[in-house]
Image 1 (cartoon, one colour):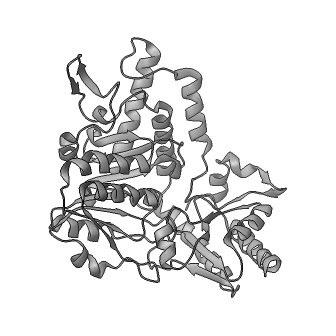
Image 2: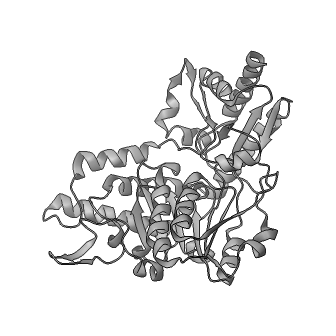
Length: 405
């Protein structure tokens, strides 16, 4: 088991006070805090390694290029891709999904084809498919979620048919914490020849990622949800698919040869990486992965689950609290409302107590509408949280109740 105090000591943000109180950070599903090792690695790049990559004729450029491509290899190993050609650097999960929808979807889907997603999805995994379905005159279908937040696996045979060409789904819900059986969904999609896309934005910190074992065709995630920098993400794509897909953006770096009549494109992965890349993002992400892999992921998961159990027990003593998402397998994400109180008012009171949570629709408006909600309060637990953090949240919610009801 990792030493919690040693873990917390690595996060400078936890040393500060908010409104005169020690910070309790419970918004990690939105973004994780950054360990000192990641901060130092990015600072090292900006201080002593600043240079553009791939074509410089000097020492700093050679060093930056080596570190940049070393980061690609670190990421390849982290998700167990077969080659770095399958690792595309993006701005984040959202851009990765849009790249697939535009480059693959617009070129290989036809009128009457079906796209299947789930009711659990973040807007980033809904809107691109709505736009694509409209452009290509395809049908967009949703696998339903029950009152407990569980995916209806029994409907897979009905929903995924011979007309299904894309199945895109989140491995872990950002609002309910529900963890999806990747193998079940992929197996059914493969049986009809559909391409699978896994949104691993939340899953990446919860489970060992193995794209070869799972057999997914595409996978996307964002570094900032894995203790890494903002504005950097990863798109894994199976090489056979990436080779036949056209570029998503054009310009420098993604070309092989340009003349005034025509252009030939660069090899993978550079065909999809137009312009000056987010160099410090890649290097910082590699440092974040090194930090994360220094722990046993099961120890992290069990720690977070223990704290979630503590929170649920504490909330059970507050009759007005209503929890959403009680799936059997779920990440330590707890969304709740308080009867008679608005979620925004609760969030403001918690903030005054130094407790950081998220309020609102969490980019899951369709799912909330299904539950007749406009928003919830969401507390999301990570590696650096403690039993004291959870108790502070419980006491702050009780105070909000006294003030609002």
